[in-house]
Amino acid sequence: MRVIVLLCLLSVVSCAPAATPTVTGAFGERPVIQVPAHRPEPTPAVTVLSEGSGPRTTRGDVVLAEVETRRWDGTKPYLSTYDTDQPVTVVLDGRHVSQAWERALADRPVGSRVMLVSPAHLGYGPRGTPAGAGGGETLVVVFDILAAYPPDARLVGRRLPGLPDTLRPGVLIDGSGPPVTRGARVVVQYVGARWPSRTVFDSSTARGGPSAVVLKEGAVPPGWVEGLAGRRVGSRVAITTPAVATAGLTTGGMTVPAGTGLVYVVDIIDVL
Image (spheres, rainbow, N blue to C red):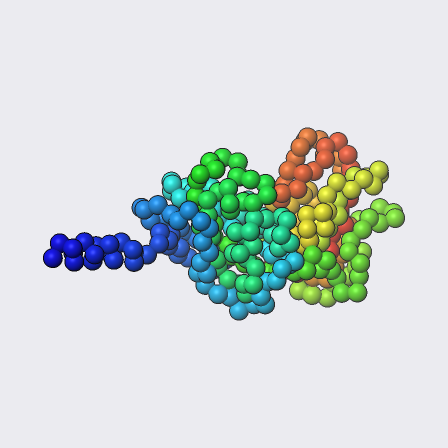
């Protein structure tokens, strides 16, 4: 009898479900993550929480996603795009992100919510463990896949944005798509340069492809809200700003050089 009981107990233990967090909330809203009391598995695990109805992402795509990350231990989020108003840009080319992120995001329909549970050192790939997280920590990452584009997504029949020969702020190409409103999530290709030296300091192509930005002050470089609000998808807009006095100003994930005039040429690819 004791042997039978012991076998039953071993059977229960072996069949116990893996440690899996629960996630509540609708797609596009900040998820609420509850972590179980027992320890997680030592290898990355991917769970599709809800499947979208959009086109599937493929290798080589640039995926735009909202991301909520928290430690397994503790109750506070670790990193969140809901705090920064800056959806993340993930290039599925085998170089920019870890294999765990690629497993989570590749071959998923746009509109899906996907959870990755991974040791920090495996979940963040080539650049190693993210700042502030120990190598042995486990992170829970929830992705809402907003969109996916080829790296060279562009206005129909146009080249990717480049610097103009002469500085002429305003609309360079009129689009015919829906208008962009303040606070919208806008998908752009862009190039930014110091003026008049024309030295490029930032571009979407250098970052891997299209970027998603939230069109509000503090989430995008100076001048973008005024320059892009009211324009239509399919437009190309030149935005100029005077010399920036604040050294090392970073806004919307972009570092703005200090003490020089700037020009951005921005293509409005889409609105999410």
